Image (cartoon, rainbow, N blue to C red; front, side):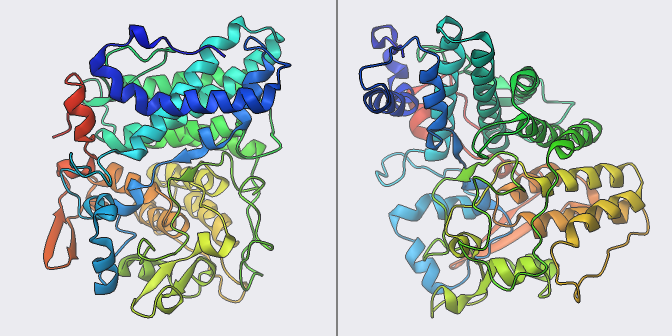
Length: 473
């Protein structure tokens, strides 16, 4: 595997380059030592298969969205006191929608690991995409490996643009600041931010060009397949407010994988009776959050009262995936997210069968077809209740159906990133428009529909070193 020439790197880019490149240098050395054992050389295509199989380089996603969303409600003094240490400052700053999440000079967290992990993944992907053509494998093998890297890169950019850029607005996307768009194998290019429109166009181009070479299925959910790419496209178009294309790709994903886990007969979940993430039939592409909560103090997710009211106590997602506060700590109150700790592994935030079902339901609702919207919602819900507790939802019209679809998204995806993304895309729609208020300690914080805080700030350490990396307001 080739490496980058640091001589060509301008000094003002060094820090950013090191953040996204250091793990590549270290991992490549380790990967060569372990995998080649003196028998393989860098131009062999099999090397890139080994690299893609090192899923920790490609699976980690962001966790900031969970902290900012209204899924959480941190009100217990004991938890607040624990979180007020410097080590958890980024958590509190995100939860309270601060204009600076990572202050310069705080050695505990002046680096945004969410940003760094995404660009590290992008660098891995660019290395694979750019180097594969010159390797000595078959064209079919090279095309498949390149396609997998394209899907991973597209997912990273979709996360980045939904964290550090304004929500997609067709009228302003061409001028709204997106994120730096790095597609070449280099660490010396400038870090000017591409527009939101350009970033989304790159995501779509990566995914659509990948599909022909991807396999229909993979042995593990960490490896992209055609269903993965269709699922990513459905998600991408949903957050572009293009519901026709979102539903189209959701259909294509479901045509390849449509199995739902049946929670109706389960009384408790454990690591032995619930599918592992890598083989879970609901997951189209496994992506995990940075630093899973695993329901340990002080970062355990205390669920918001509104969410719990929408969820209800007979829903198996309440029964199986949440616990009373006493399970977490004797000094805590309320109800806590427990899915990770019960199953024994980090939660999936990648595209899934339930997400595709609810994308289709939303498209029907927005088209005024309440009956079909509720049909798809109920296709999911029947697997989420004990038979004695299940009641099919109905809607009087498309607008009513849309509200019910969004509520179902809250039930299905709480604690798994998408609620914050939904808050962003729905903030200007009258049925969902609101000003959020939360108290933390002695202070009150608000998030109005037109707030700049719907966009996470880029770490000041990076913007200080790279003046062309424009700051968010």
